[in-house]
Length: 52
Image (cartoon, rainbow, N blue to C red; front, side, top):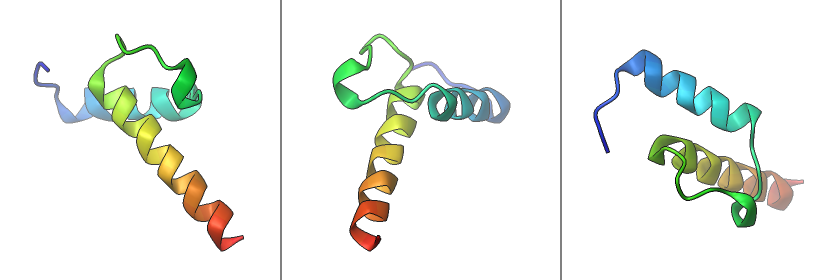
């Protein structure tokens, strides 16, 4: 993975949250930061379901 500056990383993470798709629909060619952020959101969704 090439180095990205903080602004680019935040943009990628925001894009990932705004364009979230389930794991089975994710393109493995997407930037690793996007995939990481979507996985993070998966965990947040599971935690919310358990708490609710």
